[in-house]
Image (cartoon, rainbow, N blue to C red; front, top):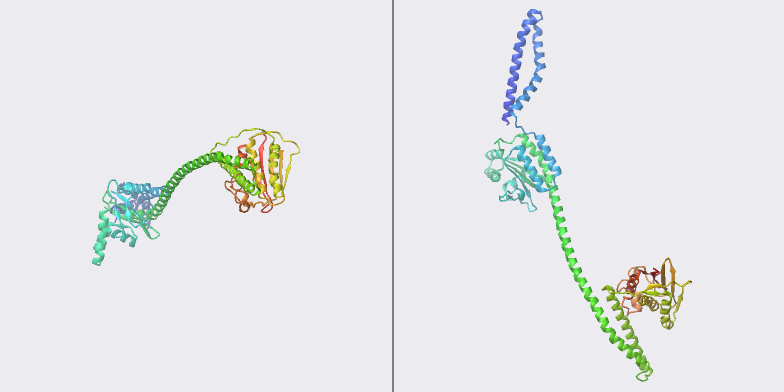
Length: 505
């Protein structure tokens, strides 16, 4: 019961009674003197006239008296609409959990003039704790499912006013119920709580608002209770939104940390791989240089044996020596390949450009392969340009290696038919192409053809000794000259065409 409301209304109605009685007496006297005695008006009209005047003036007077009595007795009255509007603004705009709870408590403490307040949040284990921002150097309050207060709120789900709970305890019908309510009241007293508001989401208790006594010592009014009841569902949605925001923030931080860790590990692995790659290139370079000297000596002595410098060899021995010589030549080429790889990957590839007429270079290379082509009964044709190409500045030895590699591959992977080699000049480029009628390639083979150690399944069956490095080196040498290299094929078994272009300037 609001005693101020009772007093205010009592005074209001007392003044209205005085007004009615005084006005009635005054008008009865005036009307009797003026209207009846002097004007001769019938006395039966006097009560009607007095009632009309009283009714006309009663309502305006009541509003005036209500205004001034309310101003006198409710000078510090709370504007609940204003409080609720401020709380709604905070709930709508704030997404940081600590700031949200801090702002809500600040408004409640300031507007309702309460001693203290705290909001207990539930974690995933069902424990209710006080956020760190409200500790103020004191030990955090923790409640769990074993707490009588929490069990009561989960079951009843209604707001608790401590004084009302005391009366409920006194009116308890059984000792068990009384003992249970006593334990709930003790929890409230330990928290210095005068009003306890449960915040429910999907029938689950997610947080508890603990409100201390008012500074004035007054009880919580009906308007106060109504404010908290309206506030509860809004708080539930706001707290859930803030929790989700914090989870996203935590996940983002964790993800960033994992990305940074993975990036750091990749960087370290990258450094290690570069070191290994450098060591590998250095090893290949040293090994290749060391192997070239004895290989050259072996080739020289084998050549002398075949030429009869150490005596005549019979046909059987000559055949064996020829096989050994060819194997030594193949080993020499392989050593040169590895030496080129090490130079390319270590950045030590050097070009020695000089003016070269490309078709002359290509014609010389074709002459070296004519005997090999004739043995396989393959026609090797050179299609010269209609007009002689201009000399271009290139490293003769490097481009010769490229041309030799492409022609050699065509001969290796062509069992019968024809190989056409063409040189032409167009659009500021000198173009080279070698077209064969060999094993061809599928579309999926073309994309990785110039990668390191790349070989098709068909090529592996025909030439098992290939290294898979020839085309890779050719590509790097052509690109070092500012040119391009590519291949095309209608399909497997339908031949292939390998081409490269070099800029004239």
